[in-house]
Length: 435
Length: 91
Image (tube, rainbow over the protein chains, first blue to last red):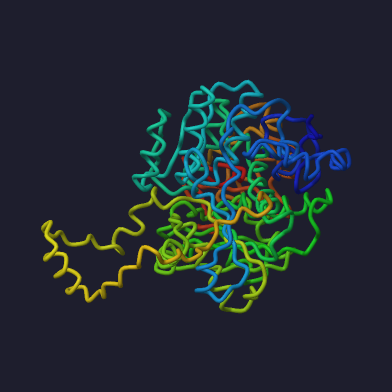
């Protein structure tokens, strides 16, 4: 059953029925889906959720579909695990990673929003979907459109990484590369949605699309054993996911599924595109747009539509924001890979780098529960680390050559472990709440 | 002089469905203020206070966000095009 009441303007409270509309006709503010939480009490429970499928649709009662999902049957419910080695490195005792770098099928958090938006597009009867994207959304929209059998247009800035371009083209959409930044693409897409009447997932389906991001927060809570982490660090581009993680936490509190431990949310941005972090530091909720200049292209959005709501989620929760330079982003990507075996894209590097700063500043205490939100995969952005990882030299296939190589590199060969020696316990990949 | 203003669909109820309206004026602010003569009521959607746009209204002069120019005081010339664009989600 659906608990959806309708659409409600986040600014002026104006209500309207469920339709492919995103902007309030009264004040131009964004519409958001409204639910009947009172009707959910006693029906949407830990048990009802646990009885759902092992994908994001286990939270279907808290998502805005009227009928059955049309795609995303293998999306979401990504690993959540304790980061023991990274924690040791940072001196943190309760550090966790929510890892959407392996979200199916295109390896980013966007599967969540797209699964909801495409299912909703089918409900509304659209045959053509599209998006404005910095890459990940285009990949995901193209893949889910292919699964749902819809025509697809993806609009992207002209200078995206090759992996992001090919990662969309392979699914057969019409790709439009636009000279300019994401903000230019965004503006054009708004006009395209107006003129052609397509379902542009992050334009006219935005109220439904953004709700999908809540599942990231639901999963953290469930996988943490129906608890909320005290500190959650989240990257911000357009500002969709951060307020929705906060909303997810608040919904679970309202439904009595988790205790209110006053979780704090922190915003991470690249130094070359940090309009929200700047506004947080200034203490004023006026987001001044910027011209992005950062290697973290997936989060290079200088005019974040939901920046205002990011600011308020951070402030209301008692969090803070930090930004990271390109150098710090690459170092953090390498740190995460070296300590946890996770290869993330620059957005993830930004989040970890910002988290490290917040921890070092003492804003996030080292002994409290911390979640780092990893939202994308490094295999799509090879360019980000290419210059940092020089190609190793080639040797002949002779042991003597290898010996010489080791000598050159002054690497001490480790003693060979006897076959009988017990294997050391390694950091378990904990799926709390599921064991 | 006269400038074309592109009207997004949520505001076309004020323009009898027209997606472009020509308005005279010498600055972005003057043009947007002049819209109310041809589309009565639209000013309450655009402006929070005189000379202060609503938070979710983005205004472009040709291809540039006016916040990178001189905001509402940015001068306009014959043939310029102003777009009113609602904020949209990231991607």
